[in-house]
Amino acid sequence: MPVRVRQFLWFAGIGVVGFVVDASIVFALVRGAGVNPYLARVASFCAAVTTTWFLNRTLNFRSARPPLREFAGFLAANSVGAAVNFGAYSLVIARIGTQGLAPVTAVGVGSIAGLGVNFLLSSRLVFSADKNEAHADL
Image (cartoon, rainbow, N blue to C red; front, side, top):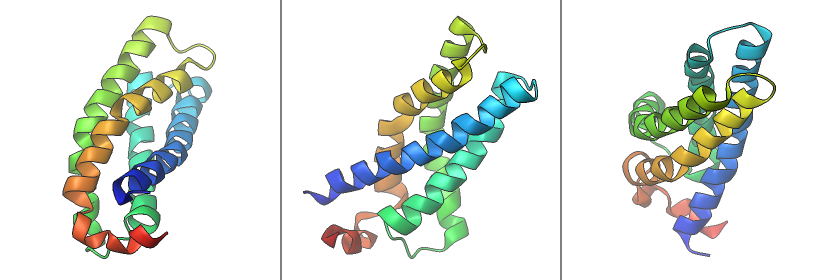
């Protein structure tokens, strides 16, 4: 299997973990604590992006770059995907509200919408190919 395909599959799998973190926090804040769904999404996104960066760094791309610098790059690169993600999330919330599992559905739609953008920018700008060769033998 080509390295980029394998990396994308890992990235998507790690994204599922990020989705669980994101959706759990947004659901707890919106449905459990009555927090505004847009403000709740900012908090849940911060937790999810930290989780996915760490897992991608250690399991997928096996990075040896300085962590704080890399995390800042990951945040910057994923801000484009986050804009796509948040736009899709906002459209779903505006359309169906926050009752039941709507916040979780909205996080899922947003996550799928931002996946490709986040992978492209993360793999090309944050976790460069020359640092990723160690993962090719998995």
